[in-house]
Amino acid sequence: SNEIPSRAKKERHKGTDHIQAWGEDKWTPEMMETVMDFTAEEASSKPKTKKDRKKLKRAQVLRAREAAAAASSQAKAKAAAASAGTAAARPNEPEEEPKPKVKRKTALAAKASASPEGERPTAKRKAKKREATPDAKKRKKAA
Figure 1 (cartoon, helix red, strand yellow):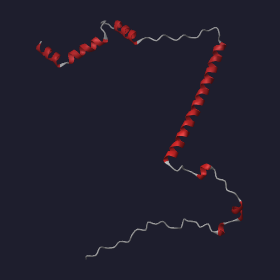
Figure 2 (tube, rainbow, N blue to C red; figure 1 turned 90 degrees about the vertical axis):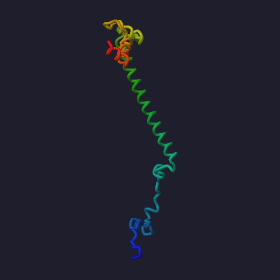
Figure 3 (cartoon, rainbow, N blue to C red; figure 1 turned 45 degrees about the vertical axis):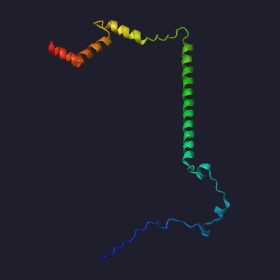
Figure 4 (tube, rainbow, N blue to C red; figure 1 turned 120 degrees about the vertical axis):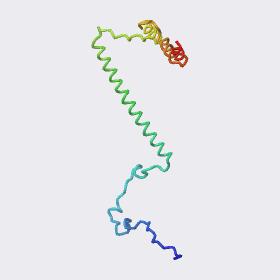
């Protein structure tokens, strides 16, 4: 009763069934006389360190960006050539002038003068704030 029961340990080693032995029986004259060529990519499928992998990935991203930029610049050049071609086809028509930009202050002044009460929007906001304060509520109850 004092003994600890023994348990059979799990076998964690992998079998050797999948390992092939390339002995002399597999050395054929065709295999021995031909030359095998490996490219650099096949020889090292992954770079050795994380830094090397990052460098390669960064170089690939930069190449993709350059290709995209070249494609977009070519598209812009084609569009510019097309627009220049249409402008040359109609020389009598003047080009449209860009509308002048309205400054923000003048736009706000125009809105304020267009409001029905003639009151500035900031004054309206201030009046609402005054009404919302606790002192204003007390004054309304007292009156």
